Length: 449
Ligand SMILES: *Cc1c(COP(=O)(O)O)cnc(C)c1O
Image (cartoon, rainbow, N blue to C red; front, side):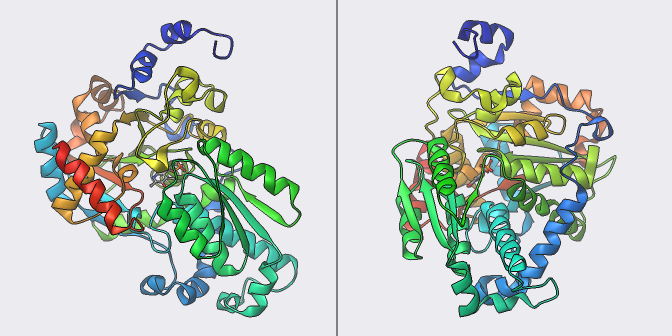
């Protein structure tokens, strides 16, 4: 029994559930999707919040540029490129045996964000900086008009050494929080789930981060982290399942993307729809980006989440409207996938509810396809990413090749506009993966072809 109902009853109510339980690839349209003006938007999240997050990141930029030289090129702003990928488009058209008519197919290279090489460099680092600023303001050590490069000093490192930052993670969030917090001088404790890779733990330990390992999955690592932080004074828990700050850090991506698209002459308007495909774990990353994009482009942008067939937590949560009250294990799904950033069995309630009227749909991808996309983009565009990062790649084909996709296009009045559309595959991680590991990934995708 799940929430008082048998699995059979759930399946009767949601026919797609049978496919999901069988870990087949599915494409689900969100029946609660609404026009922007009719959508319920949380009062506690506004465009001003996103703009003030962007301003905070600008205040920190001189410090970031000083302590992370790889960010100097962009003056301490942690941002990635958005690029056209015509060769990958051809490659995928061959693979899926389907021509795709559109104006642009783009890749958002968050896989190559500086400092921690994944989308977590947005939310995770933002939240640590916000906490550092709050503390320094509280003790009168810093003001908004200061040059924040003064944070790179013994005085500040000593100040922060009296405080701890705690987080639970499948790996990438731990890297972002760990690297940033350790640089500022905080004590950092990262609670890692069993699927977190050895090299991530080693890298963090080398930076002086305390890593605690668990034999169970992400939800347990988060719960233990939360418990530990509550018991210690001066301890701050980065709550991946509920944090508004993480969410806002991700949302800033949309402001930056808008500028990049206009530099690339990519039109987004009533006649030029934009489709964005985002890999989803607990939901904060893709949710924050979607929220920001909706603020910027309203009905002109259509956002889809992508999850592994073995970890469809957001799909189950949103489809049933039960969000975090159900997890994939309830339905006999094992939450075992090579897409480590996405190996999450229970989605964020906060994100699920925030997305209720904004998200267009969710689809699932099996690991084989992730590997094939991974070696495909390496061969065609010489870009190396981790398996999770490619979950967005099949999105465009789901839209074109499934009944649900065609229904969406028709219902949204997009039929005559698809040839003008742009599509963005949001690549979410990979730059920190050691070469040896990356070669293994590549080979798996290659062999499968
Ligand atoms: C964390 C992560 C995601 C998804 O972000 P969530 O906030 O967990 O939904 C996607 N890709 C990679 C590589 C990640 O590390």
